[in-house]
Length: 628
Image 1 (cartoon, rainbow, N blue to C red):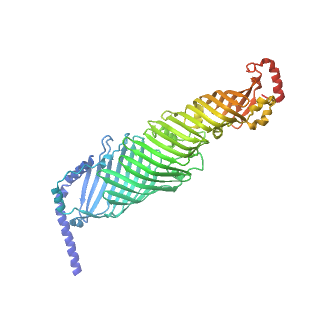
Image 2 (cartoon, rainbow, N blue to C red):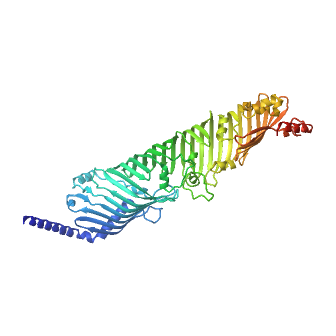
């Protein structure tokens, strides 16, 4: 009986409390439209954007709840009429009884149908940037501060069951790059919130990048808020084979948000990631894109983003350095150090089909023709070893500057085969095809190693001093060979010409009968080689060649075809007696032939002035010794 009486008393008490609360809140219920307008006005003043609420409703027991339907936040000036944010429905519920003790116990907050439209204009200004700027607090007198301290304490948040975001959609558009990315099916779960304790956060959804299929991602972390700093620990982000681990601190002091932290990417296989991202890119070599990893510390503010120190490893190449992004005006600066690099295996594999290739995924060529170099960019690069088209350079240093589709690599220096290279490259990426200019100077470079690496006319050896002013078009080696034009000068103070012993020819007349071939391995030692050439549409025209050996002076001229890497030149060996022996040099790499041109030797135009009287003798010699 006592138990039943107690239950009835408790029920009656709850009814009295409910009735009292209902009577107390009746005026507020009748004034919900005024409350709704007041909330919208307060939020509008705080954000500087128009805020609208379609409907506001309240529940009383056992949870004091507020439901908001159709809330919108207007866009920033200059970003169009569509709202920055829209929420289809928001449910917030609070326990009633703790309110009488000035305590807040929240049930889960649920946001359904959130839509965010994030934009960045061509100047790098975003439509959400001004939301974080707060107005300075008005000055208060000392008496007002003391009076506030004597007042009853404000409401204190004891606990919140959590926050749920269901079916959110986020659009991000960048007018500068033309990109349009989407986060869809976004679901966020925030665990129980207790002041001073970390909160579990989970997020998953689909990321859609323009031109690629949507791919799923997941993010989890533990968040701890201690005003004015938010700490995210145990950060874990994953896409396919890519995982990002880390920790970061976010601080908002006087409306100036800042963030810093450290992120680490454990070793992963890049090829499955490319497949998951919908990229059809296939490198030229099957031995690359096997493993990658990264680690970076970052510092972010509204003005700058700095990645330093940065370490990235791809296969056997490691890149370290720092990257800085400036917001106003938008620009990038980087200082990178590369231990060694072989870029050619990473180029796209040539198409084996006769059909037109599919639209390429964004890659080096696509970026060059796109907006990648429209934004000011300055990169200082050092590289311990660079292998390109067979050439191996060490201790490379270069400064890359790009803006408005123009690219300049200047200054650029490197050690090259016991010598030194210095030069500059300028390219205009806007036209199609790409056009470029090259200025280069070689000092004491071992020419035989350069020619062997390039597989072109590897017959000379010696320390080369050269200058080149070249220009052409196209982004591939084949295109460059076909369009190359300009001028060249070269000098080798002391060296050797392999494949023919010109001194033996000058010493022994029997060499004319082919005996020099048996001694060709000796080559020809020379001094004072000087050459000049003009280049036109892939053909090197050697205008003048002068070479001094111990027994002769050699002059030459001819052509070198870059498209086929073949040479066709005539060398004239002037003996001390004044007699001149013409030697024809012709053939592709590895099959260059040196033949004495008896046709020219006994022609009327021969500098020996033998003339037609020796034509008969010439024909007999050619027939007897099999020379041409």
